[in-house]
Image (cartoon, rainbow, N blue to C red; front, top):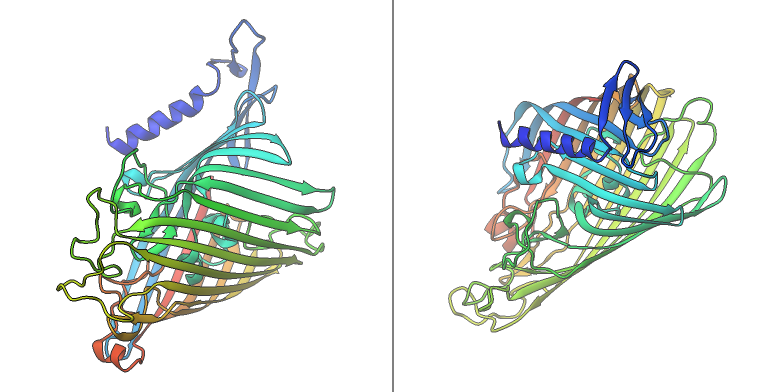
Length: 480
């Protein structure tokens, strides 16, 4: 049996085993609880997804599968001395295949959730694994791994996006998945959520040695690793702290990128405002950002360079008569710290402006959508931009780690049964200003081609090479 198949069987067995022993008879399933307690008959329900629940409501299991099948057409248009051109393609792919087990055990306040991402690599299969004590609407305590509640678009499920996938700014600024403890709750009245909060402490795992965000989805054992990059499996960072606040004064705006309310509800205007704050510090092993004669490491293996990053986002959301408006602003401040003798690769002492110290980066996304036919046929527009930090590097001007980028897009979606069965097609154009990053290509959104470094004359003359990418995508999603 394959490793994936074995994991799936073990997980399913554990999820069912969390419920008391089952015995089948003509009436369905019986739950026999320990201590000679009275049996409680289960009920099988089909409410968009498959679920089982005991008649007393003490145990519940909901099983949800999500599949996204996509066709992508890519047309590359380069501009400038190093702007490549012609890496064009058509490709069918399974973008996501996920299974989620969720529900509660013993009492409704003991809630669990496990999501398996079958398209991921072996040590990324477990995407979400949480246990929550929902003690009161004012306080819930969640432990485990889940998507970090920092910015709206990333926190909204990939199955509830208006476009085929998320924006370029989101891909540069989101904080991915995190392992830790989250406290959450809401202060609300009958018709409003005045304050909803999420606050927590987490591992914080560096996404890359030139990418100062968290990305903690791997199955990581205890241990020290000098190269604190998520794909190395290492842990070498301070704890990460995260806070998100939301207000929904006219009623709750669902975590969704469209206004899918029915005709009996969509005439009520809704809006929400949220903000997120994240602080993350870690060592990094990047010989180009911190050149030393000993490859950037101390005797203990700890890197000689470190970073701490403060990231902030504010977002606004409006819903009315099938109209959805979503705005997000991102800001990030990174400070780089260096220890030990500063010696260049060839033994030469470093001069002025040889390496970056502080960086400020910004981004913005606006999406507007409208259901022409209520809950069925929708059109939408997107504008997204990223303003990366430029700095001097090795005496050359206007280098950076994050490329400036601008994205514009149009989407058309047909929702046969809401998000559970929908077809979407979008066309986007994204322009990147190429940057210089000596250890490889700079960061870019998932599923786009690697960007190339700027040419030497481009850096010397402080002019831009650019890469433009046109993408046409068609995706069908089914959830069952």
